[in-house]
Length: 309
Ligand SMILES: [Zn+2]
Image 1 (cartoon, rainbow, N blue to C red):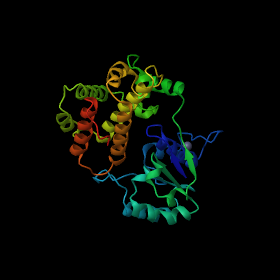
Image 2: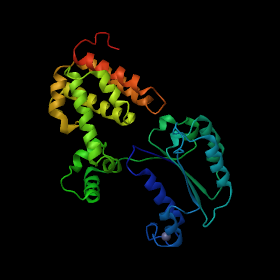
Image 3: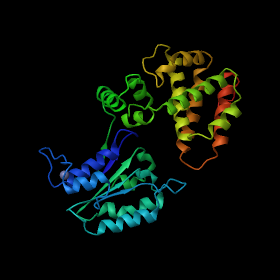
Image 4: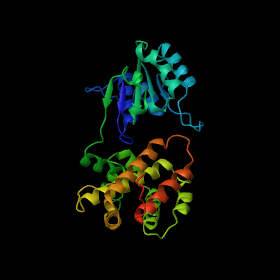
């Protein structure tokens, strides 16, 4: 099967819990794992021999799952399970498999050993060959509803000072992601980057200097922020009182910026940011990427982006 859904909503946890329900020898009335039998203990320690995780090699710069790793996994599944009747193989994120790796999985996906369950996990199924997806049973997972997510996050953070609603919004409603970004470092960094973004528009910050600072940070994260700010500029440009913003805490600043911009230019700029975001997982020249994005942003804000590309 393949679990499809945004990052930070618990797809890996779900897969492991599902595996636990299959392996537990003393499941509850609704099939939930008991948490105390020998299999559950091994699972929670991460040492159960019948649950195998295949993730990108942390040593690999490309962050890919390579063919050798998939082959080894396929060979292991052809052996019988070690402890119980089932082996569960979890591949996450499935789109990290390069083309060769994905192709080498096809035969196993088609004819897995009887005792084997393969669980693929994907945030971006478009990054997977259709031959892989068509051989899986898809299960689409959505973020939990706001009330449940807020309750869960408040309990985890245990700090009434933190605005859980804002965090969830910044995390696109994904609670685990909201938990990751709840630390001061993340929020301070976001503030700092937003101030630069704003200052470039006002002509108070050299876009090349900002690009040089940004290229040292997490590119995917920055492009996500940038896309969020620019999307909000578009929303405000269309309707200053719009109810939904990605960054509700920045409404005032974004409204001032939106007044200086031509909506069509903002729209074209957003396309450029999204294109960059789609490429950000590839090995790219980060400095050049941010230079081109931020110089264009400076020109756009100064009203001199006349070529519209
Ligand atoms: Zn158990």
